[in-house]
Image 1 (cartoon, rainbow, N blue to C red):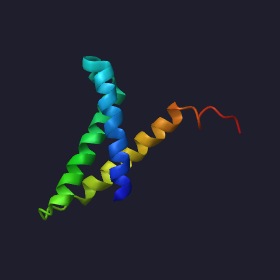
Image 2: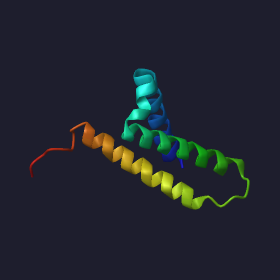
Image 3: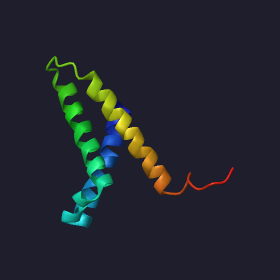
Length: 87
């Protein structure tokens, strides 16, 4: 759960920086829309889970975790740290 908050925070900060940098153009890029959806879903799940409303949202939590992992892998590939290496 702590890891979710850490990655959620990192991706939230990234989205905020990009929104300020790109302004209206931010939502023209499909990846930015995807990233924003992941961040939003992550925080919705976190709020619902911490409110103890008795709502079973375990599937939403799993979806959010999966999408965060995909976004993390996308960032790794974009940094070329792990991409384009011939083995």
